Length: 256
Image 1 (spheres, rainbow, N blue to C red):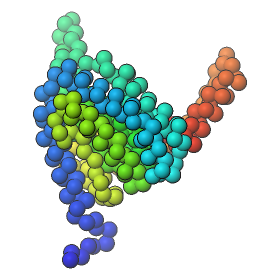
Image 2: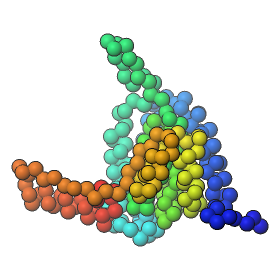
Image 3: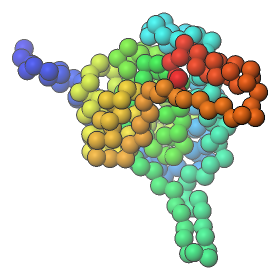
Image 4: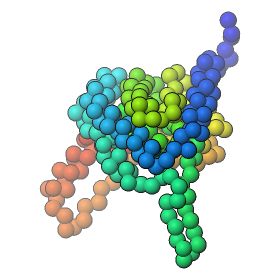
């Protein structure tokens, strides 16, 4: 039996990070050769599959985390799948995406490689769907670290996206999910030399850790968002919208 030092995690958690990052990189190297048409087919299949399971995923999220409203989480899952897809479907992410002959500038889309994605307990399924869609749209692989209190529902959302992606022609391994509850494993994922960009959604400490990782990072933490009402607005309508926004899903949105 191996004696663990204080604060040391079982090797399995860190070994899982290593294994899944390697698998994602192997799949991504194949995926970056795909055409725009192939990429778009895969992303649409993922969005359609996630949208279809929006209700089931919402129920799983509320049951596992004890947070939020099923009907509202269903809405968020639908936005994260269908609406995100509608917003990005026309974007060109393969080959030359812009050319300025006057300035002699050509812009060529290139993937980062593998995305390290941190998913919060407040939006565990919708965030997983959204991050998977934008990662694959840009020909990246993704390794997700779920919140310890939302591992099952986050894994379920990713399984739906992965199955749809593979059936649409994606190489197996592009979408990976950590299964161990380990802060050290999440930190190792963000620092791993073969993860190339971080999408971190969570508390302030997590976002600061992402920004301190030494690699490109996009962080979203909790906010107490002020509201400005312009003098020409209809006050009753504005107040209703503010209350609806702040109370949606029992205030679990980052913007609340």
